[in-house]
Length: 138
Image (cartoon, rainbow, N blue to C red; front, top):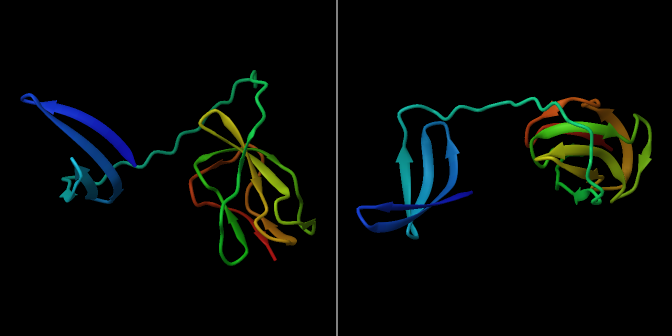
């Protein structure tokens, strides 16, 4: 969700873009919802980030993504910095599975259930999109 403030001919408009799918955008202007049709679909970008050396001493953020059917998914787009498990490992709910860098922050991705790692779908250095499958836990 993105928020903008526009002044047109002296009138202030608070615009919130709730979501965009293909050529349809759901927006609110001063609290009134609208469905807007665009001429062209929005461009989806995949950005590869060349990560500079880590200079911050702040602890990494902890992110836990709810999943279904045993698949741990990426909560946001980013780059895999480290995979802490291997196929066959037993994990407990809340255990660190991997580290995902997103928006210059290190995000610890934890297991959302107890189980055994059946498949690892990413490796260190991979760029992933939001919702991408990371690990399968049985």
